[in-house]
Image (cartoon, rainbow, N blue to C red; front, top):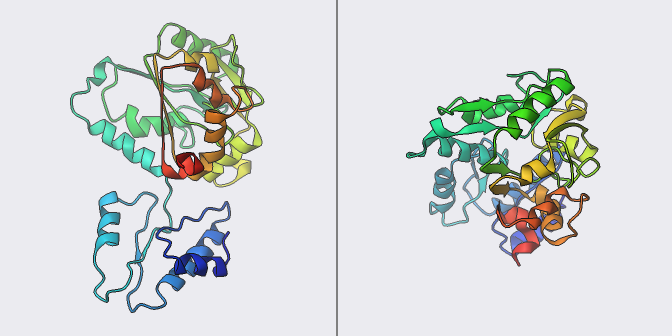
Length: 288
């Protein structure tokens, strides 16, 4: 975390944007308080605070673009912003798009925690159901039930996928370079299975805390069911969306490093049917 002296140097140089990240929230709050105090020290005007993980873009533009009555700089603080939350807003917009015949679409998902049942508030099936499956009239929404016996569920879901050629897959990249829950220790580019049980590595489990899916590491399940790498890659089209600086190192490894299971997402370079979308925070020095 930047020291206050470093923050003053950046402010003196006219740095327009400050983004603070730490697994310790109190450190972020300290840094935000410090830079707000520095930036408003020569002004009679208070900072504008926009709460929430994903403030409306129009609201942000209005706050930053309004000319200050006192003729000083505008300071806009977003203390709870979470770049990943904007993907939820994208899903909301997708549900509103006209002209999509959802009754022709069969939906599947690619991973689930072992032990979590259908509808469990921490499960991926619950997130997807609340975000999209229950909001538009899919022909079918096929969910992984993590509470069922593993052999029975992998056999059931594996057969569903064998009978359903996948036309479009939407995926991301994990902080450890995983796709679905194919973490580096368990990823297999030649996997014969369609879906399998895996032990989640520490980086993957810690990411679930970073993403606010769980409050503590102890709450994150140790095992999951995941669609395997070859089955993911068999999709006719793949759209890979990777936001935030937390995914920068994994994205660099996927795009520029060796194609190997050390970074499972690197397999995406072996096909022409992938489109990747990353934001500037994720791109970092890739944008130079």
